[in-house]
Length: 101
Picture 1: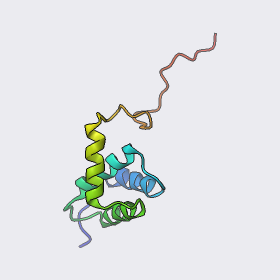
Picture 2: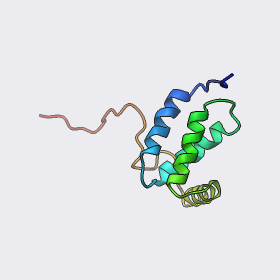
Picture 3: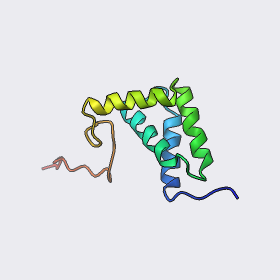
Picture 4: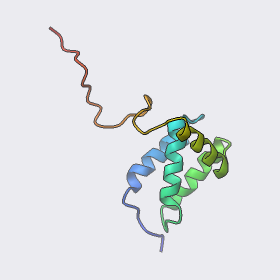
């Protein structure tokens, strides 16, 4: 048996692919990989995602302990999801008033 399918596998697979392509992680990237590592910790499946996250950390020169320390500092500086201008969430609908008169 290959293991279980995770209900968020497809979304997470895309996200991990983006993280794999990053040469240098932003604070949001570090928070995201920490969150995903926690999600898949002990999960009996999605081994490809789990291995790619470990590969990503190695590429960034980080151990799990380094990641934990860095994310702890990020959160303690007041980071909150949605407060990061790099983060893109939602439909992408532009609500600014750019109407042409």
